[in-house]
Image 1: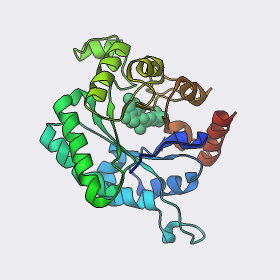
Image 2 (image 1 turned 90 degrees about the vertical axis):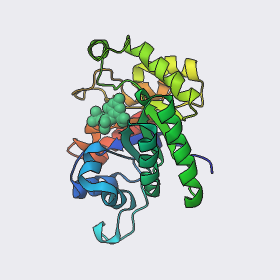
Image 3 (image 1 turned 180 degrees about the vertical axis):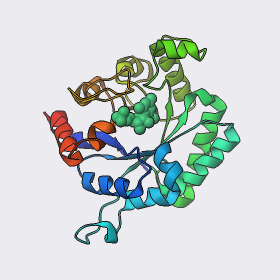
Length: 255
Ligand SMILES: O=C(O)c1cc(=O)[nH]c(=O)n1[C@@H]1O[C@H](COP(=O)(O)O)[C@@H](O)[C@H]1O
């Protein structure tokens, strides 16, 4: 079964619902349906609400909509960044497959055996479910880390070089792509080619606060540089009107 690709500009946006509050996540997901390409649920949400919380957000529910109409299912980027021994990561992948994520991730730093175990587990588990295997990607160097941080944890910098090393390793292991900072897109495209999926956080519309992100770009710059999907959290979820913020980003991407 073919894996999905964004076909319209707004579908490139995955909104990060970083909250422990299910009701808030369900409401945001519902309000942003059709304005973004999917939702990203990560460690904060998952550790508070588990798989049932994830299902509530992605499926919506009749009782939760203001007018009783059904809400279409939101594509899901399940951002649990698995990083453990291969056997444990394979088990973790199998455990989340019933949630039918569109995108799932592991840490490239877990090494080749771990990444291959994750891929095998995803392929094996997708077959009986009759679903497409999730797009399996690896986290390289977190966008909150700079050269000084890499040095502090004993990793060889500069950050851009370490990202390329891990991107090439990820591709060699057969995974579909990586999470990377917008500033690394051009070099990764050169190294890994046009089909390697690039999912890019560290996105800030012009004028918005960078917060803890250190290597940022605007949505349009990142997509023009070659991002397949851009991950945006606080600039949408922290806005007074999240739907309006998402629309403005879609318009910027369309323009
Ligand atoms: O894997 C991720 O999604 C991720 C990797 C990374 O290197 N940097 C990064 O910011 N993220 C995630 O992207 C989202 C960015 O959120 P905002 O900074 O609020 O836009 C958060 O949910 C992060 O967990």
